[in-house]
Image (cartoon, rainbow, N blue to C red; front, side, top):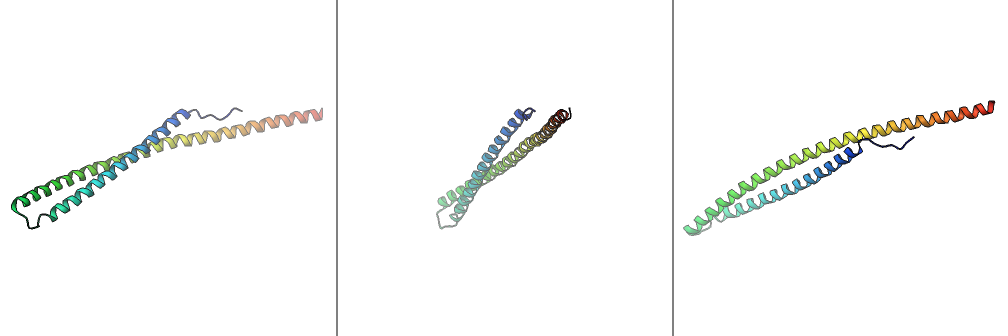
Length: 144
């Protein structure tokens, strides 16, 4: 009997590559999300430092500059928080894409395994049939 060959192997290989790309996409999204989280923390620290400098005994011009700086830090924090939120959505999207790619590949893996089992059973039947024929031929030679 001929060797097992899965007729959809090229498609399975393609889906495996797509899954690997989805894994890389998720890794990149997680790295971007971590960087965005660091930017939020940095912006929070700058804002906290700017707010502590507001009450120090300073002149009016210095106080005005400190207020403007604190407001700018607040805007940066809002922007960093929005960017982090977008990156979190990107991670969610990348996870969904990976899950879908993995599911599609696993479907073909199960089909391949089922075909392999069927092939093995057919090979076993063919071998049993062949051995039966050999045994029958030997029996006929003995009897004759």
